Length: 375
Image (cartoon, rainbow, N blue to C red; front, side, top):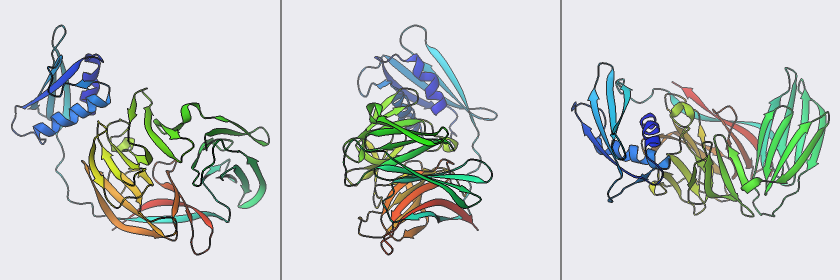
């Protein structure tokens, strides 16, 4: 569907209104005609086109579905200015729908760091086969530890400061490689590098945009959440409700588009949104921290979500599969001994970085959470 929308979008100018009419010719297509109209409309709207929605369209789009030897063919005829243009997209014959995956997913948490002082984020980078560098982001400084064959050989810390005070500061570490790292904290973007010693240069974040893979999220300083403005790599911008965290499908699960998102709003409601700002569904029992995990155990789009407890209570992590427009819990929740303070997708695209405060010990624990498949 995304491939068809990408071909149609350039034929519709920004000021033109489009409509979609789908006709199914073969009588055996594995898709509902109305569902296809809605999905294609959402894709085009997310790409900047304007849907007529009851008004007279400038560019009617007539889509027909017909069977071919290898599957189905979608033919879109775009009318309007000039000669109608036909766009053809082949769709492979879908494989028989299998039953539920036999592997039962289990969430596994591995503690990789513990400390008594507050911790916002962390990153581990291998300099070579024997040297590892740890970056630890605290509310007003970054700590650096270098290990050689497991033994600490260097410790350093640099003060970062902060543009805005917050009771609940947010921070994120984005390493480029073992010797270059960028931190985002309280309105500041700080570039750290080894040359030969470790040094840091900080400046105000342009437009308060935090890069998040193929998107950038606008941080709401001096608050601790994102305003809802999201900028995509293509330059397209979308406006969501203000949110604390968000998740979209990974590239392998058909992502890297801007049509389907789950946002954990600052009002305590997590919502699944399609091509418009209108919520497709509201998700109960989801907390304020969510993150996409890579496909695993036969599931494609997996989202990790915290519970709804406060900072005085232990928390839990629940894995969800998002298929269609309805997230479904898979596996059992993973109980953790304190409130989750940070949950970011890890750089490998398969796991998540987690920071919590252990209510029993008082320590801040940095962990890696992964999905383990078992029979």
